[in-house]
Image (spheres, rainbow, N blue to C red):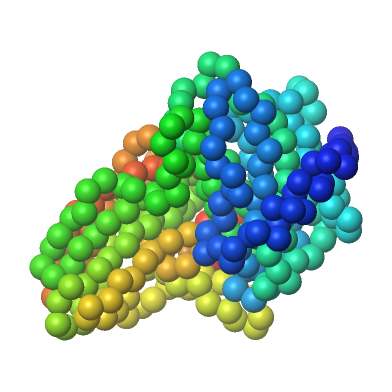
Length: 292
Ligand SMILES: [Cu+2]
Protein backbone atom coordinates (compact mmCIF):
# COMPACT_ATOMS: atom_id res chain seq x y z
CA UNK A 1 0.00 0.00 0.00
CA UNK A 2 1.30 3.45 -0.88
CA UNK A 3 0.29 6.42 1.18
CA UNK A 4 1.20 10.03 0.72
CA UNK A 5 1.77 12.16 3.77
CA UNK A 6 0.15 15.55 4.10
CA UNK A 7 1.80 18.68 2.75
CA UNK A 8 2.07 19.99 6.31
CA UNK A 9 3.98 16.92 7.45
CA UNK A 10 6.38 17.27 4.54
CA UNK A 11 6.97 20.93 5.35
CA UNK A 12 7.62 20.12 9.01
CA UNK A 13 10.12 17.46 8.03
CA UNK A 14 11.96 19.87 5.75
CA UNK A 15 12.27 22.50 8.46
CA UNK A 16 13.66 19.97 10.92
CA UNK A 17 16.15 18.72 8.35
CA UNK A 18 17.83 22.12 8.18
CA UNK A 19 18.53 22.01 11.90
CA UNK A 20 19.88 18.46 11.77
CA UNK A 21 23.43 18.12 13.05
CA UNK A 22 25.83 15.60 11.54
CA UNK A 23 25.01 12.60 13.69
CA UNK A 24 27.26 9.71 14.53
CA UNK A 25 24.21 7.56 15.22
CA UNK A 26 20.72 7.49 13.82
CA UNK A 27 18.32 9.10 16.27
CA UNK A 28 14.94 10.80 16.03
CA UNK A 29 14.92 14.59 15.68
CA UNK A 30 12.44 14.67 18.55
CA UNK A 31 12.56 11.61 20.79
CA UNK A 32 9.94 12.43 23.43
CA UNK A 33 6.33 11.31 23.32
CA UNK A 34 3.80 9.66 25.64
CA UNK A 35 1.29 6.78 25.68
CA UNK A 36 -1.79 7.77 23.67
CA UNK A 37 0.05 10.53 21.81
CA UNK A 38 0.64 10.99 18.10
CA UNK A 39 4.32 10.86 17.24
CA UNK A 40 5.98 12.40 14.19
CA UNK A 41 9.24 10.51 13.75
CA UNK A 42 11.96 12.14 11.67
CA UNK A 43 15.01 9.95 11.05
CA UNK A 44 18.22 11.47 9.72
CA UNK A 45 20.66 9.24 7.86
CA UNK A 46 23.99 9.77 9.63
CA UNK A 47 26.00 8.54 6.62
CA UNK A 48 26.01 5.83 3.96
CA UNK A 49 27.48 2.37 4.46
CA UNK A 50 31.18 3.25 4.64
CA UNK A 51 31.19 5.05 1.31
CA UNK A 52 28.34 3.28 -0.44
CA UNK A 53 25.09 5.18 -1.14
CA UNK A 54 21.95 4.20 0.75
CA UNK A 55 19.19 2.68 -1.40
CA UNK A 56 16.73 1.32 1.18
CA UNK A 57 15.54 2.40 4.62
CA UNK A 58 13.35 -0.07 6.50
CA UNK A 59 11.70 0.76 9.82
CA UNK A 60 10.22 -2.07 11.89
CA UNK A 61 7.40 -0.66 13.99
CA UNK A 62 7.20 -1.65 17.66
CA UNK A 63 4.14 -3.18 19.30
CA UNK A 64 1.57 -0.58 20.22
CA UNK A 65 2.44 1.92 17.47
CA UNK A 66 -0.51 2.26 15.09
CA UNK A 67 -2.35 4.54 12.63
CA UNK A 68 0.86 4.77 10.66
CA UNK A 69 1.51 6.95 7.64
CA UNK A 70 4.84 7.87 6.11
CA UNK A 71 6.33 10.66 4.05
CA UNK A 72 6.56 9.85 0.35
CA UNK A 73 9.90 10.84 -1.15
CA UNK A 74 10.46 11.69 -4.79
CA UNK A 75 12.45 8.93 -6.49
CA UNK A 76 11.64 6.39 -3.76
CA UNK A 77 9.01 3.66 -3.53
CA UNK A 78 7.16 3.77 -0.22
CA UNK A 79 5.47 0.81 1.43
CA UNK A 80 3.52 1.14 4.66
CA UNK A 81 1.80 -1.70 6.53
CA UNK A 82 -1.89 -2.29 5.89
CA UNK A 83 -4.26 -2.50 8.85
CA UNK A 84 -3.97 -6.30 8.98
CA UNK A 85 -0.32 -6.67 7.96
CA UNK A 86 1.67 -9.25 9.89
CA UNK A 87 4.98 -7.60 9.04
CA UNK A 88 4.77 -4.09 10.40
CA UNK A 89 7.36 -2.19 8.45
CA UNK A 90 7.75 1.06 6.58
CA UNK A 91 10.10 0.67 3.62
CA UNK A 92 11.56 3.36 1.41
CA UNK A 93 13.42 1.74 -1.49
CA UNK A 94 14.82 2.38 -4.94
CA UNK A 95 16.30 5.80 -4.20
CA UNK A 96 19.86 6.86 -3.53
CA UNK A 97 21.42 8.97 -0.80
CA UNK A 98 25.16 9.59 -1.19
CA UNK A 99 27.48 8.71 1.69
CA UNK A 100 27.71 12.34 2.82
CA UNK A 101 23.98 13.08 2.41
CA UNK A 102 21.99 13.56 5.60
CA UNK A 103 18.55 12.95 4.15
CA UNK A 104 15.46 12.62 6.35
CA UNK A 105 12.81 9.89 6.40
CA UNK A 106 9.63 10.77 8.27
CA UNK A 107 6.53 8.97 9.45
CA UNK A 108 3.63 9.53 11.82
CA UNK A 109 1.76 7.17 14.12
CA UNK A 110 0.13 6.90 17.52
CA UNK A 111 1.41 5.16 20.64
CA UNK A 112 -1.19 2.99 22.40
CA UNK A 113 -2.66 4.26 25.68
CA UNK A 114 -1.53 1.18 27.60
CA UNK A 115 2.17 1.35 26.75
CA UNK A 116 4.56 1.73 29.72
CA UNK A 117 6.36 5.05 30.17
CA UNK A 118 9.70 3.69 28.99
CA UNK A 119 11.89 3.87 25.90
CA UNK A 120 10.36 2.40 22.75
CA UNK A 121 12.87 1.20 20.15
CA UNK A 122 12.30 1.30 16.40
CA UNK A 123 14.60 -1.11 14.56
CA UNK A 124 15.89 0.62 11.43
CA UNK A 125 17.75 -1.11 8.65
CA UNK A 126 19.80 1.06 6.31
CA UNK A 127 20.75 -0.82 3.15
CA UNK A 128 23.40 -0.02 0.57
CA UNK A 129 23.19 -2.77 -2.05
CA UNK A 130 24.17 -5.98 -0.27
CA UNK A 131 25.33 -4.23 2.87
CA UNK A 132 23.06 -3.31 5.76
CA UNK A 133 23.55 -1.22 8.86
CA UNK A 134 21.27 -1.65 11.86
CA UNK A 135 20.11 1.23 14.05
CA UNK A 136 17.92 1.38 17.13
CA UNK A 137 16.62 4.92 17.55
CA UNK A 138 14.47 5.18 20.67
CA UNK A 139 11.54 7.34 21.72
CA UNK A 140 10.98 8.05 25.41
CA UNK A 141 7.37 7.77 26.56
CA UNK A 142 8.26 8.91 30.07
CA UNK A 143 9.93 11.89 31.71
CA UNK A 144 13.46 10.56 31.23
CA UNK A 145 15.17 11.37 27.91
CA UNK A 146 15.50 8.43 25.52
CA UNK A 147 18.62 6.39 26.17
CA UNK A 148 20.81 6.01 23.10
CA UNK A 149 23.78 4.69 24.97
CA UNK A 150 23.12 0.93 25.05
CA UNK A 151 24.14 0.74 28.69
CA UNK A 152 24.63 -2.90 29.50
CA UNK A 153 25.29 -2.40 33.20
CA UNK A 154 28.17 -1.18 35.30
CA UNK A 155 31.72 -0.86 34.09
CA UNK A 156 33.89 -3.95 34.50
CA UNK A 157 37.59 -3.47 35.15
CA UNK A 158 40.31 -5.99 34.39
CA UNK A 159 43.94 -4.90 34.72
CA UNK A 160 44.20 -1.50 33.04
CA UNK A 161 41.10 -2.08 30.95
CA UNK A 162 37.61 -0.76 31.60
CA UNK A 163 34.69 -2.38 29.76
CA UNK A 164 31.34 -0.59 29.49
CA UNK A 165 28.08 -0.68 27.55
CA UNK A 166 28.19 -4.37 26.63
CA UNK A 167 25.20 -5.43 24.54
CA UNK A 168 24.00 -7.60 21.70
CA UNK A 169 20.80 -7.75 19.72
CA UNK A 170 18.03 -10.31 19.56
CA UNK A 171 18.39 -12.78 16.69
CA UNK A 172 15.72 -14.37 14.52
CA UNK A 173 14.88 -18.03 15.36
CA UNK A 174 17.10 -19.59 12.68
CA UNK A 175 19.82 -16.97 12.43
CA UNK A 176 23.25 -18.66 12.36
CA UNK A 177 25.17 -15.76 13.88
CA UNK A 178 24.85 -13.01 16.46
CA UNK A 179 26.86 -9.87 17.10
CA UNK A 180 28.42 -8.54 20.29
CA UNK A 181 29.35 -4.99 21.22
CA UNK A 182 31.30 -3.36 24.05
CA UNK A 183 33.42 -0.28 24.70
CA UNK A 184 36.97 -0.94 25.92
CA UNK A 185 39.14 1.78 27.47
CA UNK A 186 42.82 1.21 28.16
CA UNK A 187 43.85 3.44 31.09
CA UNK A 188 47.35 1.96 31.19
CA UNK A 189 50.73 2.91 29.74
CA UNK A 190 50.99 -0.09 27.42
CA UNK A 191 48.89 -1.33 24.55
CA UNK A 192 46.88 -4.49 25.15
CA UNK A 193 45.20 -6.80 22.68
CA UNK A 194 41.87 -8.61 22.59
CA UNK A 195 43.09 -11.97 21.32
CA UNK A 196 40.04 -14.21 21.59
CA UNK A 197 36.55 -14.66 23.01
CA UNK A 198 34.62 -17.66 24.27
CA UNK A 199 30.95 -18.23 24.98
CA UNK A 200 28.68 -21.17 25.72
CA UNK A 201 26.38 -19.75 23.02
CA UNK A 202 28.88 -20.39 20.22
CA UNK A 203 31.71 -22.80 19.42
CA UNK A 204 33.54 -19.99 17.63
CA UNK A 205 33.38 -16.33 18.69
CA UNK A 206 35.36 -14.21 16.25
CA UNK A 207 36.53 -10.60 16.27
CA UNK A 208 35.41 -8.83 13.10
CA UNK A 209 35.99 -5.51 11.44
CA UNK A 210 34.13 -3.81 8.61
CA UNK A 211 36.32 -3.18 5.59
CA UNK A 212 35.74 -1.95 2.07
CA UNK A 213 36.80 -4.62 -0.44
CA UNK A 214 36.31 -3.88 -4.15
CA UNK A 215 34.06 -0.95 -3.22
CA UNK A 216 31.80 -3.17 -1.14
CA UNK A 217 31.79 -3.08 2.64
CA UNK A 218 32.27 -6.51 4.15
CA UNK A 219 32.91 -7.94 7.56
CA UNK A 220 36.11 -9.86 8.01
CA UNK A 221 37.86 -11.62 10.85
CA UNK A 222 40.85 -10.06 12.58
CA UNK A 223 43.10 -13.13 12.96
CA UNK A 224 45.62 -11.20 15.08
CA UNK A 225 42.89 -9.90 17.38
CA UNK A 226 42.20 -6.27 18.16
CA UNK A 227 44.73 -3.84 19.60
CA UNK A 228 43.61 -1.59 22.46
CA UNK A 229 46.20 1.23 22.35
CA UNK A 230 47.45 2.75 25.62
CA UNK A 231 45.23 5.59 26.83
CA UNK A 232 42.64 5.02 24.13
CA UNK A 233 39.08 3.76 23.83
CA UNK A 234 38.04 1.19 21.25
CA UNK A 235 34.33 0.78 20.61
CA UNK A 236 32.75 -2.34 19.18
CA UNK A 237 29.43 -1.18 17.71
CA UNK A 238 26.91 -2.08 14.99
CA UNK A 239 28.35 -1.13 11.62
CA UNK A 240 31.94 -1.32 12.87
CA UNK A 241 34.16 -3.57 14.93
CA UNK A 242 32.21 -6.37 16.60
CA UNK A 243 32.29 -9.81 18.13
CA UNK A 244 30.66 -12.39 15.87
CA UNK A 245 29.12 -15.45 17.48
CA UNK A 246 29.26 -18.12 14.76
CA UNK A 247 26.75 -21.02 14.64
CA UNK A 248 24.91 -19.91 17.76
CA UNK A 249 23.37 -22.71 19.81
CA UNK A 250 20.25 -20.74 20.75
CA UNK A 251 18.65 -17.47 19.64
CA UNK A 252 19.54 -14.31 21.56
CA UNK A 253 16.31 -13.27 23.31
CA UNK A 254 15.54 -9.63 24.03
CA UNK A 255 15.75 -8.86 27.76
CA UNK A 256 18.08 -11.77 28.50
CA UNK A 257 21.87 -11.70 28.62
CA UNK A 258 24.60 -13.51 26.71
CA UNK A 259 27.81 -14.07 28.65
CA UNK A 260 31.14 -14.05 26.88
CA UNK A 261 34.70 -14.31 28.16
CA UNK A 262 37.08 -11.89 26.48
CA UNK A 263 40.75 -12.84 26.61
CA UNK A 264 43.28 -10.01 26.60
CA UNK A 265 47.00 -10.55 26.01
CA UNK A 266 48.08 -8.61 29.12
CA UNK A 267 44.98 -8.09 31.25
CA UNK A 268 43.93 -11.74 30.90
CA UNK A 269 40.40 -13.17 30.68
CA UNK A 270 37.27 -11.34 31.81
CA UNK A 271 33.67 -12.49 31.64
CA UNK A 272 31.08 -9.90 30.65
CA UNK A 273 27.31 -10.03 30.19
CA UNK A 274 25.88 -8.69 26.94
CA UNK A 275 22.39 -7.28 27.48
CA UNK A 276 20.19 -8.45 24.60
CA UNK A 277 18.51 -5.45 22.96
CA UNK A 278 15.68 -5.48 20.41
CA UNK A 279 16.07 -7.25 17.10
CA UNK A 280 18.02 -4.95 14.82
CA UNK A 281 19.08 -5.65 11.27
CA UNK A 282 19.14 -9.26 10.10
CA UNK A 283 21.00 -8.18 6.97
CA UNK A 284 23.90 -6.91 8.98
CA UNK A 285 24.59 -10.27 10.56
CA UNK A 286 24.61 -12.22 7.32
CA UNK A 287 24.76 -10.25 4.09
CA UNK A 288 28.06 -8.62 4.94
CA UNK A 289 29.69 -11.97 5.50
CA UNK A 290 31.40 -13.42 2.49
CA UNK A 291 32.96 -16.81 2.89
CA UNK A 292 31.67 -17.84 6.31
CU1 LIG B 1 30.80 -10.13 11.57
